[in-house]
Length: 138
Image (cartoon, rainbow, N blue to C red; front, side, top):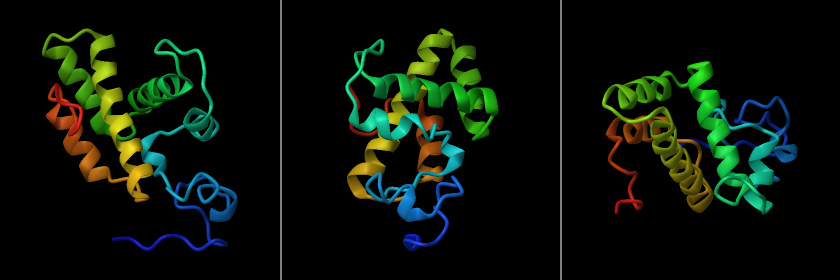
């Protein structure tokens, strides 16, 4: 298990801010920049109700995360998963929504357990798609 950043140390999310001015204010769960979480929308999505397609800003923020990961190829496994799912016959929208479920499950786990982003677990969940992430199975 990795050591949590000290209050006056740089935030592990990569924002360039001190931990106390960044992720500590968000509940202490630092998120890797490789996860593609948009800094401005992450805290708002976690706290504000909204009018996204699914009735929430969180849903919109998660879809934006997926789009950023695919466009930026960071992490590359997201684009690889997207291309694999489309190649297997899923529509682009279905592929994005499946990937969004993995992103949402990772965000939930980070917030629930107060742990850091688990890249290897995230990638493993992407590779299992279209099987749903643990806890979301039908």
